Image 1 (cartoon, rainbow, N blue to C red):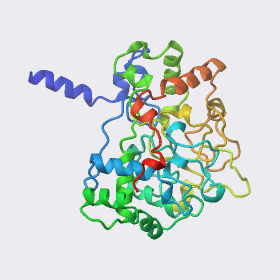
Image 2 (image 1 turned 120 degrees about the horizontal axis):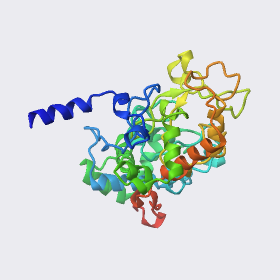
Image 3 (image 1 turned 120 degrees about the vertical axis):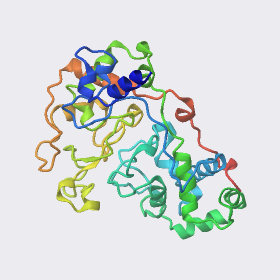
Amino acid sequence: MKKLNFLMSFFLILPPFLLSGQGQSFKSITTVNVQSLGPQKLGNLPAVITPVNNPQSNLKILIGKQLYFDTRLSKDNTISCATCHNPAMGWSDAGPTSTGIGGQKGGRRSPPVSNAAYAPLQFWDGRAPTLEEQAKGPVENPVEMGNTHESMIRSVQDIPGYVKEFEQVFGTSIVTIDMVAEAIAAFERTIVTTDSPFDRYVRGEDMALTKLEKKGLEIFNGKGHCTACHWGGYFSDGRFHNLGVKPADPSKPDEGRYTITKDKADMGAFKTPTIRDVALRAPYMHNGSEKTLEDVVDLYNKGGRAGDPNISPLIFPLGLSIAEKKALVAFLTTAMTSLNPEVANVNPIPASELPK
């Protein structure tokens, strides 16, 4: 028994290239290639880690869901979290950039809330370290909800149903912005997509992927160089890269991560989004500049937009054939789309059912 345990431990710590083999076996097309940056094997998502200072409970999650769909958090009662992070649109919106209070257009599109619990930093530029901090931002953003924390809390505090629920969960009838953010984050940590055809394939259902999708997975993890940034169960490194994306306004290019770090190396760099459910979230990139997945693959295939002085060294011409691009798009379109109904079929809470 000791010998068996030793052998199992030995294989667990072997580097990916010693486990991958030469053929297109299950392991070889899910283990990230050694020439890529990503060190984590592609696979199922692990369990969500809940912060010690914001434990989950059924009622807290329910409050968070109610708040998520409640337009009364905005200044004019028209915008909710779900306005820009819509379950029916892959937990994002129709883009190309998001629309907030008064029909104002933001400069970036909404990143998906689904699986955001796995992101080490939130927002395209990583300015929020947690889901709790992220939940506070849109309320005060003049283009998004256009409210203030103080005014929003007064609105919630004036709703007896919310006050009763918050008292049950937090032990006080005095609602705070931290309590609102913790409830919304608790709900968002339940939005996890775990049952795509790819997930079923990883769990041993060989027929879960078609031959074309398996070829696409092979390209994703090989010639397509996708796992340089999209690796692990989350299919993202959580880091920031300049991909040579076409700016929405060339005269005012978005500085991305640079606005937070002031590091010139971060100029025009944006967080790697997960590619889980990516087919549900067109258009693509932080500014919605690529209309389809075919457009995205073409952008990567040619090595990004020419002339960007700060483009990531991970971006270079790939030389994919038409057939290889087709296979890659097939993998992204079908194999990565979640089937679990508790996430894919979440319906908005009607205003008539929100706390009164």
